Length: 107
Ligand code: HEC
Image 1 (cartoon, rainbow, N blue to C red):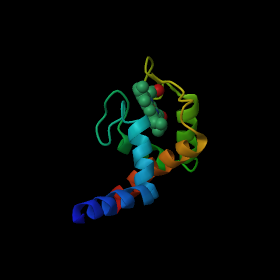
Image 2: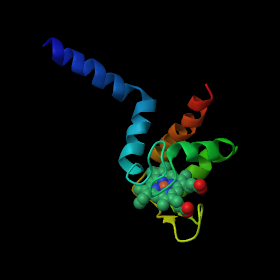
Image 3: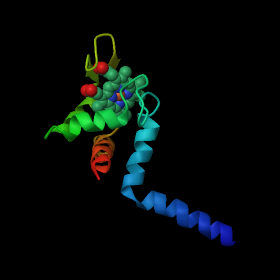
Image 4: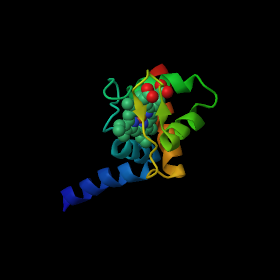
């Protein structure tokens, strides 16, 4: 019983914190190809964060990449397909989470 309560305390905390929820969305939709701090098939999330954090319209641009795909951002031949399965709200939440990575680094 004690452990069940503890499990809930941890799980419920994860669900209630929106930063964690956005991270889960990113894990589910993006982390197949993007790793947190290493370039894989796509650039690392931290690199993406740094690039777009320097841009005033960064958040909107990430949302656009999610919805429309990217073309030749890091060289010809590589391209990310549009992800129609990710809703606008989810895309914004993911973009906010990605941008928060660069802010974390600066602290
Ligand atoms: C099927 C693999 C795949 C998935 C899934 C994927 N990406 Fe990508 N992504 C790539 C590749 C490959 C590139 C490099 C594309 C290029 O250079 O045009 C890329 C590029 C990007 C860029 C542009 C980086 C730049 O320098 O302009 C952003 C932003 C991005 N991805 C965000 C996301 C987000 C957010 C998700 C989840 C919603 C996601 N990606 C899911 C493969 C993927």
